[in-house]
Structures are given as C-alpha cells and as structure tokens.
Image (cartoon, rainbow, N blue to C red; front, side, top):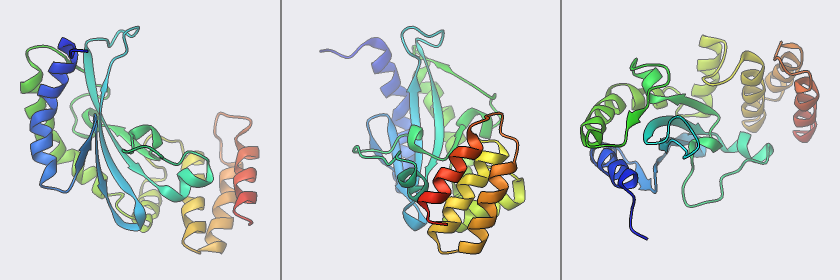
Length: 206
C-alpha cells in the first residue's frame, strides 16, 4: 500500500532529526528513537501523529521519555517490541514544553514538514536531549525527585511510588520502605491509589 501524504510528510520531518540524533547514539525504529543509558534505562524520542478521529488529524507532535525497567517490569508494563515507545516510559514530556515552544505543540503534516523537522532537531539538541540527560540513571532520577518534589508527567504521589520502586531495585531497602509509606498518604486524586501502592510494596516483599 503506497504511503499517504501525511506519512510522507512525517518522513520529511523526521529526516533532519535522524541526522541529528544518529551521531548521539540514538537508533531509529519506526517513529521512535531509542538510546540506552545507565542501569538499563532507555531514552526515547517519539513522533506521534494525530488520530483520524482526533482534532489533531493531519498534525504531529514529538514526545520525550525515559524507560525505567525496574518500574515497568514490576507493574507489568515491560516493553517487548523492537522499539521502546514513550507509552512505556515513566519519565515523559512533550518536546515543545521542554523547549518552551508551547505546552502541547503540534506541527502540520504538509509542505512545511521539512522545515518543522529542522526546528525540531534544533530543539532536541538544545533542550530535549539535555532534558533526557537529567534522568540518565536510577540515581539521577532519585536526585531530580529530591530537587523538584515530583517527576515529569506525574503528581507527587505517583512520583513517590516510582522512586520507592527504584530504591528497592538498587537495594536501598529502608529508603524504599519509607517512600512507599509516604506514597500511601500523599494526596493523589485517586481513592484507590493507596491500595495500589500497598500491592506494589507487597510485590517488592517489603
């Protein structure tokens, strides 16, 4: 089946990004770029097209993510395909938000796609990749949580749970147990969240 005009435009947008990220060790698989970091973490740059039934149809956006294996595995969200997508990532953000281009910026899939790709490549090099670098190891994620009070894409309760799992995975048992307890009582706007935290804690045998 021949590619649609939107698919062709997306390829045009990706071309300058592929050139920019390849030299940094990112591997392109489909619409996602993956690069392995410390502790088995994977940094992700993903192109997302608007769905046909969406108001964003005919447009695309760019997502950033960091896949944290210990969290994904214990929560049953381990990546199994050829590439890791931002949907599997614990740390997530829009490139546009990180690069101060707008909180939820979408670019049109038209004749301007190539030019948009150049802008996106520049934004990735100046803001996106450095953002991913802030979360390049388990220790770095814990440090950023301590500095910011939460992790990108999550409220403080979910962030505490993520950190508790990471601490458990690296053998920081006392710190992990304490963080699980804090996650249980931190407001989360989800009445079932404390129960979920206790379930994960039990899986960690704490």
